[in-house]
Length: 356
Image (cartoon, rainbow, N blue to C red; front, side, top):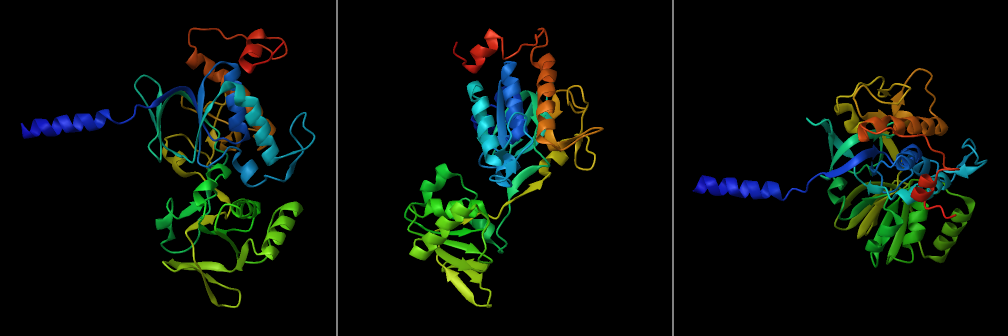
């Protein structure tokens, strides 16, 4: 009986594991090309979920070029990385694609029925009929603070690139923000009215942000609302975070929380372990459907390679369009899908919520 009891307990434990999220398509990467992929799938009535390792949509366009001008988007003489992401999110909104931010796909495995089972590092699982890899040159992950052992604080007292909606968790706390780009400056400014005390830490007294934001930061520092500390983090303990200042002194900063905004860096990561063919860390595709050697797995944007490949956003948009059409034979195997135009199709107008 004891053995049977253990088997029953094991069966009950397995039954509590959430079933995979079933979807027609899973998009890996929420940068501009991934967002446009969702839009093109929506026009074809293919439902999708989108997973990104970053805490928000936009990919490197937002994280690296958020306020820098972009001049080569068709019909848009000038925009910014952040502006482009916002426009694409507005464009895809009618299709109600479901986003999963702060999660990185770890595993990908073909199932007996042809579908693809994927799992994130947090345990979220997806059962997808098609997969679209739009991961740029890999997953963009935050650069870590280089202090031995500090990773133990991640998720409790150490946070990287938190989104604006989550800053409320720092209410009434003493917060140290480490970084020198626009993300660090904007985070410090956003925390100032929320936190008990905000200290902005950077290795030198030079920050990268637009002029208006920098002027606001300097005024807050002059007013004493934000503390500025110049130095490099070297250690931490219960007393606080220790900095080595430019004159080789130790400065200890008490903290309830540390926010790291040190930029992001691309890593191919788990993609290398999915069994896909790789050429110089890129995935070869055909130029008809932008499908990989694996049926139903497509690769678009900077992650793919083919003769004549150009790493341009506009090329990624083209690839996403043909990839979406390539998925129709898998999602709708017994159906002929007509080409429709958003200018005239009443069905597309209905999907887009266009009012006549």
